[in-house]
Image (cartoon, rainbow, N blue to C red; front, side, top):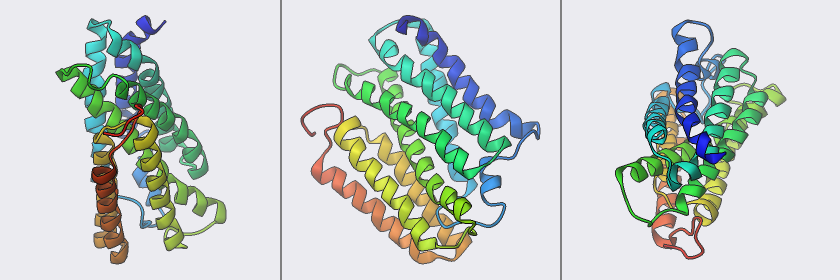
Length: 254
């Protein structure tokens, strides 16, 4: 079964391109960012151009999918199940977010692709150190960025869903909203490095999201102190990774 699943990685990649860009290009739906800022700008939301990281992720997805069409090996067989699952589930989340935009539903639907992305990162981490190549580098970038950015997206979804349930505005309970995002990121970071993967690309995605929060609060919300806290938080995450290492999928930290 896993031998044939590799043929579905490229369609899963293309499905996400279509879900993310075609509806907006044809004016059939509203982007996730547009829905989020419709009633105002919350402190935890990066500016729209920070979400361009999806383009990098989808490009790596496509390259790996093209490779998988040609090569049936341990790498493509291991990564095919979670990558196909991520592609389908992520596209489903994007479509529902663009056409319905219910914050609670968006939060529920983003958890399955995030879990599948972590599974992909875990499977790749088991193969780390077994020889290097350009396609393994691509797989590392893909699984690390994908897991990291979906973790950021999940964190951002928490206060949005909470405000919706409590009928609050974008800047109501702003401290609770901000710290809830950092709590999810910190918890995800701890579990990821201890049990899932040693990749640094997870940190690239996470710090990119934190930088977006910094820019958002320095340029759009006026909550400059949130920006400084986010910087300190990002530095702390990197410091902990450098000084304590990471186990990932392996028993010994490196």
